[in-house]
Image (cartoon, rainbow, N blue to C red; front, side):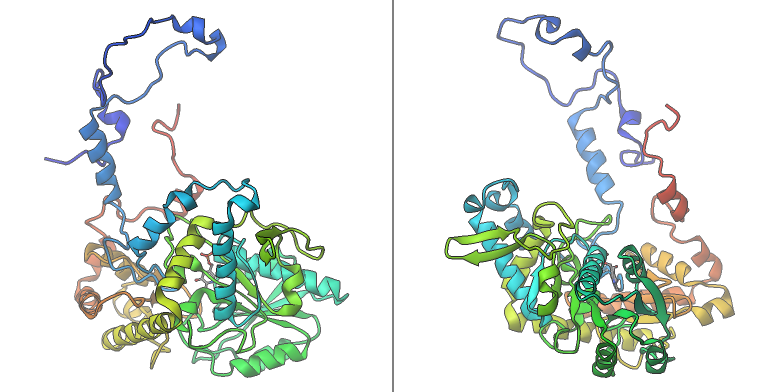
Length: 485
Ligand SMILES: Cc1ncc(COP(=O)(O)O)c(C=O)c1O
């Protein structure tokens, strides 16, 4: 018999007369409803709501909640997007009424605790970045990129320097060129070498006084640290450009090196990745940015400051680019970030990076025995395998391998990114995983590669939906019970 409790909709499970709650008989005088409400506020017939008993409702939602892979239930090696475990302590702390029940319109003097938390967060991020000024406002890494590029554009405008161009390595995340274009810049790609580094000759050929910003991800999207970072930064600075560090991969270098020390002028953090905030369904996220002193006047307004009267929001910032988000940013995520930072402290954060790199290298050493890792002698926090040979020899694509991993109880790795690796399978274990989990994942991958191609083409077979048309699902979502009504 099929368990329909999660596959059927509440409307389909509905049975007339079923109730989740029985109200006691009314013990106050009853007045007709039309004496209490005007006619236009009254429905002419009962609302078409599903009628169910409480256990049905509970089972429906609990079963639904188990259909998705989640980091609480499964290993989640989603390269670049760093879905690390979300410590439950941080969830509890962020839910305390003193945080969760604040209203953003409360006067500063009634939210001193929250402002202090944000102020200290600005300070801690500044320390980790090696850059003095921070804005907590942006709500995602991508919005941090856009905000930083708007800051850069304002800086160049203020100096009367017309800079039109942003250079971006060809292995970069797609949000990089998108953010640059949204901020009004033209973009051009810089080639990577076969080893996966920035091609310095190509960069040098493109650098001139039109270049405003060079956006770089370091460690890069192949999970390797740019060995010539200092030279790259010097060359960009020599033409009057700024170096932007996409901080999505900060997990590999926390407390070990600082972007400001290796030449970055501005950067974003992804607290929903690096600092273990929840990250799903496109949010809720945060994307604070840190910038050099000369860029500080252009940061979004307000920033949290401290003076003799305590903490307050400073709006008096004449050169600011203005708001990029309502209120102070995505405070729920920032509270979790703060808890994470305080829990680990400086030594703990360094240990996180070291363990993340150790775990990734352990997994790399196992995976490369049966799957090609083109740039993979060693890695930082993640590595990128390639199914190109598998595809050529047996018609098995990266997508087939990723989908089959779901049947083995693992979330799929990121696939087809970065674009510079054919049939890319990007794997990032993070620091929280045990050796047993890493071994189980490597064993599963090895088994999968020995399975017949037809089995892999049909995967996953254990999930409620096998291979949805993802583009159609996002462009034409069916969100109504009866789409035609
Ligand atoms: C390298 C890189 N840059 C930028 C981003 C954008 O971050 P967010 O998802 O927070 O917008 C990501 C996210 O996936 C990323 O992996």
